[in-house]
Image (cartoon, rainbow, N blue to C red; front, side):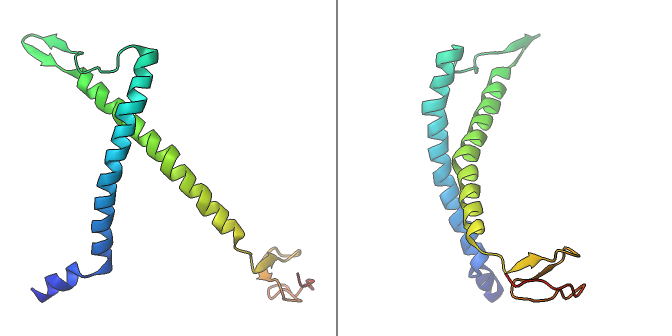
Length: 132
């Protein structure tokens, strides 16, 4: 039992639990955005907002391919919302933060290896390099 308690108290288990809870809450926001804003927008241009009534009857079996189409469209819209409103802005902010970090090295003009900015000679080819 003490091993199980130690496992539960690890930081990554707690982080994962928090991520699942926040993910579930965020899922409700994204699903609402898709269902309440994007789907009516598509139906305004396409005419049919819900494909669940589409089916093919073979013998006495009904193949409800409309539900599958709804699921695919919903998945694509959710993926697009997550990409354009979460992933894209996050990577933009992350790249801007990475650009602010100054490099402490520069390339040697002779051998193109990285050398410290304050070095007067390259450690690899001993070419003189002006300190930057």
